[in-house]
Length: 201
Image (cartoon, rainbow, N blue to C red; front, side):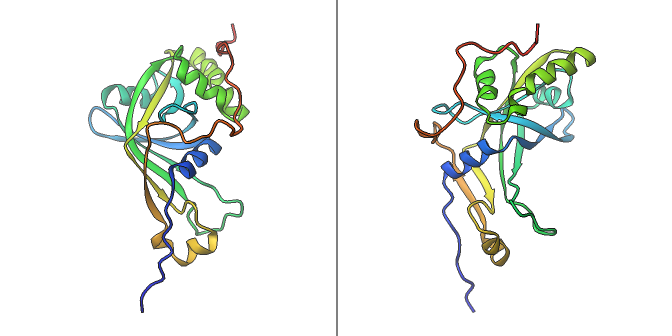
C-alpha cells in the first residue's frame, strides 16, 4: 500500500516569522580540542531588510565565546513549542549549521536586533549580561551567527494531527535568501534613533 504524501513546501517567510516569535535556542560550539559544548541562549534576530543573523549577548570569558574565537563553526536549534503540548510528542523545530564571530558590545546591528525583539525580557537581556559580567569579570560582547545557505525544519507548518500521522514526512530544507522576507507593513517595534545605554551608567 502506498503511503499518503503529505509533504509541504516550507517557505523562508514561515521560518523567519517562527524565529522572530521565539527567543530561546540551543547553541552548540566546538572547542579548540574538538569537544562540543551545548548551551541554551536567549537570542535576537537581525533587523528586517538585512541578511538573516542571530545575535546572542554574553561575556568574553564564557565557554561559548572562547570556543567561537577558536573555532567559528556552530549549530543552532530553536524548538517551536505547541499551544497544547503532548507528552511523548517532540516539538517542531528549526535547525541550522553556521558560523559565528564575536562582536564588541557597541555593535549597532546587534543592539538594533535586541531593540527589535517583541520580548521585553530579550530587550533587557544585554543589561542583565552587564550585571553578570560586573560580578564575574571579563567584558560584554555579542555573538553574531550567520546560518549556512540551507535551514532544516521539522514539523513546521503541520497540524498536530498531520504531524502524528506522518511524522516521517514533516522535515524540510529551506534556502536562506539574501534579505529578510518581512514586509514593510508587518508590525515590528521601531528602531530607536540612539542605542540604549545597556550599561546603566
